[in-house]
Amino acid sequence: MGVVAGKRYKSTPRTVTTVVPRQEVFGGTLMVRAQEAGASYDSQTHSVNTPALELDLLPGVADPIVPGSLVLQWVGETYIDRAGVLFRAVSTSTNAGAAVGTVDYAGRKATLSSYPAGISAGVTRVACLTSSAGFSTTELVFRTPGAPLRPASLQITVVRADTAEIVTAAADLNGNVVGGIINGTVDTQTGIVRLRFTTDPLDVTGAASVPVIASLVSYNAVVQTSLPMSAELLGLDPVRLPADGRVPIYREGDVLVVHHTAEQEVTPAAGQTVVLDRAYQAVIEVVDAAGVLMDSAQYSTDRELGSLTWANPVLLEDAEGNPLVSPLYIRDRVEHMTVCSEVQITGALGIGSPVPWDLPAGETRVSSAVTWGDLQARVFRWFTQQTWNTGAPNWGDEPNGNSTTAQYNLLNWPVVITNQGAIAGKWALVFTSATAFNVVEEKLGVIASGNISADCSPINPATGVPYFVIRAQGWGTGWSAGNAVRFNTDACLGPMWVVRTVLSGQGTVEDDQFNLQVRGDAD
Image (cartoon, rainbow, N blue to C red; front, side, top):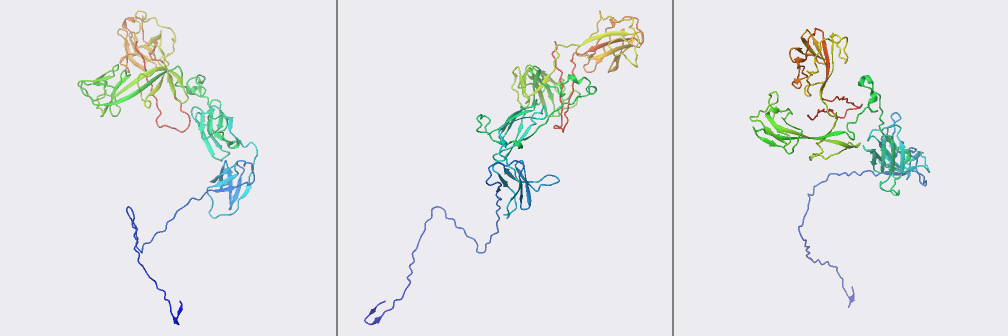
């Protein structure tokens, strides 16, 4: 504002508005979001885990805490250390409590994973013992109180001295102990355990060794003991049995039978020949869906070629004429006899000759074989006696009283006996008159009657052939009622005593069974 020639001027401010258009260019797709003016939102909650609370128990102290010596009090609760684990609210009656944290003995710190909220009161050390020597170790050798140990029963628990971590390990069937930092072996026969604590079992310099708290090393194992069995209960002197009462079924040098059974679904057609996938079977048979055997007269087999030919006509029935249930299966089994060359505690077996077939490992079985060599049936201990006491019969191998004047001519007419019909038995031909007699066996009783004018050939119902044949030509005269002829027979089968021992304890399987098969080569 100024003054000119006596006039006064006044300036008035003025706002000038200028509209400037602006434009923004977006590339791609533009998304516009909007909401109603009256829209509302529900409350949302997000939970965050409480971080672990770390307590410095001994500030300014360098010695480690002795395991099991720490007792704390905090906010009215008492905390007790047990093998590196802090327990709260330990019951005086059950000695049980709630695990709420861990203890780092080397770092002298306690870590609580569970604690009350909003607490800031100080921690009171009721008891805490430290040690300057003999705290940790990296190797350990000890012997269990008893031996032998049951395989795979040893378990080891240690506590790391650096992190207070609890590490466990268990022994396998070979006696190897492996688990985390625990590596070693156990001799189950002597009970000696050798352990190394390392992150690298191949390290021999000690650089990978991990110290563990020696006083907290614990283990458990099952020690086996043998109880003597009564000779009256067993039926033989137990001195003949192994100390633990168990007889091994696989031993080096024994004969083994490696066998596999395969099934092939089939639809019978009269006169048709079915060629199987392999040859030289031990058994080829047909079964129905229920496992019932088909009548063997309805087919023929060639085990060398591995084929089966149906009869013409073919009847779908079993040996008793009952109808079979479809579908039908051809079941064939191959077997390979070999010598056992190695037996491992894991159950692995080594054999002395290769298997001629490519057999599936999960289905192939191995059986032990008891060999007797060459065997054949026989008649022995032939004698006569004048009187046969039916109340107390003489089944011994020597005559009671005098022998008879009449005799049977064994030299010219020996008793005929076959491998197929003979059994292991004790026989008596007890005369009921001068010509007739009864055939008596010690366990079977009276099974037939005979006459000296005809051949005596009682039939073995199991095989359909005679137990023996006594020729009529061998009988002389002079026999009378009450006379007896005694003799024994042996079968061509070898004797075998089977005993199954069940260890005490809870059952682990629902069905425990085994099969016996009689094998032989006919000459």
